[in-house]
Length: 181
Length: 316
Image (cartoon, rainbow over all chains, first blue to last red; front, side, top):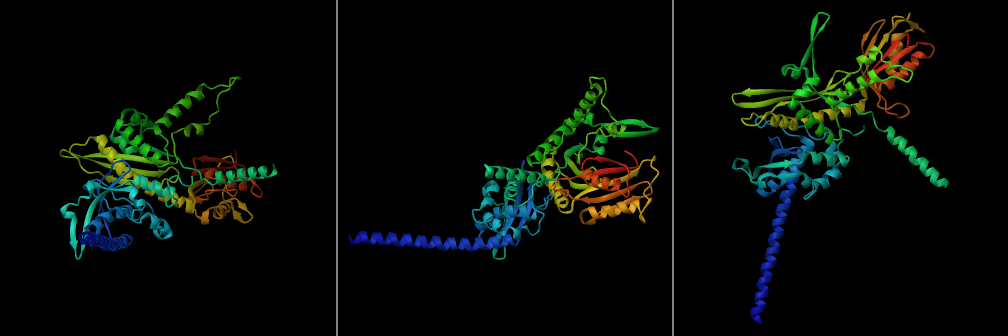
């Protein structure tokens, strides 16, 4: 009987320790995630064109910053969509892709539609629908850099540009070519 | 019953208002540039009173260049996917030919043919409000090939370049020309559309940009310097333009006693009744003003597409 009680106590202790560890870890991820979101809003990322994507897509490399490498990799997707809408990206003559202008030419759009973009770019938000990480998120050695206390990580992602544009047009966030006609 | 009728009337009114809410949509057509036609041997030459003149032979280009067909087809497809289907130049040329043949054969029961003035004949060309002018050149460095691609959006009336996308693709050892061309279209069309969108946004904000010409028939004894209550007719027309353009925007490019040319004329997209309008609709009001007292000038209004109108004073 005593042995059984002891076993239950050990099991409970292990369970509680695991729960606590997970919650602390998640909190850490959350803080790093929130910092990464702030970086996204502050345009703290870099986008390079990798090549001309297939019909309706753009193939880009996004460099994101975080103390945690996995947060930076995950944030790359958000940054990629953010860049497509608000920033565009610089072309690469070697791969034949031209400089791409952003989907909106309204500099105040992010603030004007803040409610829409808050939920759009929330963790697990709709932005996920338009972006996929190439090569299962494998990061080339030269694209993983330690800058001060942070990692600067470059991930190649493919953005469903046409789908993103259509979705934003349908939501009335940007104007379509035939809007008003 | 009465309530149903009121509701129906309301719905009809709403429908009318909604149908007025759409501006006149410009037509767009892709055409190869003169440079491309010349480089690839698709030109025809004729003698214009002693001067050799070369003009592009579009029909021959469409019939003989599969690369051109592929590029135009890709652009047309991508634009249609964006909700902006384009006029197909090859089809437009065929329609023109068919219409000419039909007109030549058409007779009434009494034996009358279709009336066609020399101006009507001149106007029978494949046209669109915006021309997407296409040029590409193949660059060769040793075994490597690359494409320099240039797409220009040209306003048919103002002659302004309103959209552009230009660049050189990545050099390749193995890719075939059609693959390089498809890649060029994919790489550049989004940028072209972004600049075109900026043009449309500007149009919705500041009005449509048109050209207005005033001319006179030589049979008319008056001219644009004729005095009406202390003001010359030319000044009267300028005042009318100032009052009726968006924010008074227009430039008087040329003005003599027999002609006036107004460029960069910004006209509202809708008239006073909320109906979508164009250069012809805008100039109809000027035509009415000139026909009415104290001027009482008989005049003829001619138009070209959405963006060009000419008023000829002194006759119909």
